Structures are given as structure tokens and as C-alpha cells.
Length: 151
Image 1 (cartoon, rainbow, N blue to C red):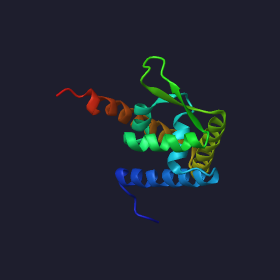
Image 2: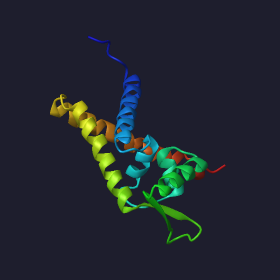
Image 3: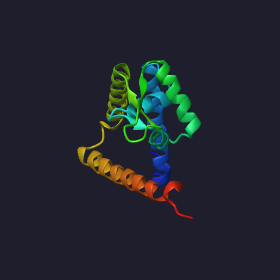
Image 4: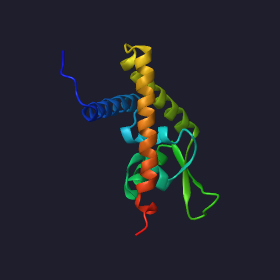
């Protein structure tokens, strides 16, 4: 039996596992991991470039290059922002939406398989704890981002 690990170490290992699953599913659909994450991030609807960069933790130049590459593949399109004519939002094409849904479902299926042997109560407790952690982290991110900090 292996030694129990502390929470932070367990979360780091979980992060690596999820990234590995994303990579495997991405390859199945002839996408890079970042391309699959981009498509999954857009499933709920068009997103502005700044928000997309924040979601994917990419700098402006990196997100622009990523969007350019998936746009050339016909998976996303740039649409004018109704509120700011200078800005654009990134939206999935029909092909991109299909591939994004398949990628998302593939990741979810593989993660469900990995956790299938956990008792139902443990799965529910783990889901609630991780949901609370991510919600708290997202709320904190909005508070401490440079754009929201006054000098």
C-alpha cells in the first residue's frame, strides 16, 4: 500500500492526470490539447479574446495564434462584439461545436471510468469539494486580477 499524500500533492497529481486525459482525447480527435480546451471553453457560446486568454491562461499573442490556427481549420470564427465594435468574440462553427462536444464528452467519459470504482458517496463528496474549490478560486481570481486592482 502506498503512503498517503497531502492534499496539495494529491491535487497536483490529479491535475497531471486530467491533463494526460485531455491530451489523449485531443489526439483521438486530431487536436492539440490547447485546441481541445479552446473548443470546450466555447461550447457555452461566444467568448471575447481577453476572457478566453484568462480562461486558458494564455497571453494575448498566444491566444491570438491559437485562435488563428483553429480558425484556419474551420473550427471557430471571429464575430463582431455587439457592445464594442473594436472587439470580436470567438464562436464555434458547426464543425467546431461538434468536435468540441465530442472532445468534452471524451474527457468526461475517461474521467468517469477512472473514478468508477469509488463509492457513490465518495464521488459526491469529491465533486462537491472540487466544485467549491474551483468556485472559490474563480471568485478570488476576479478580485486579484491586475485590471481590478487600484494603485
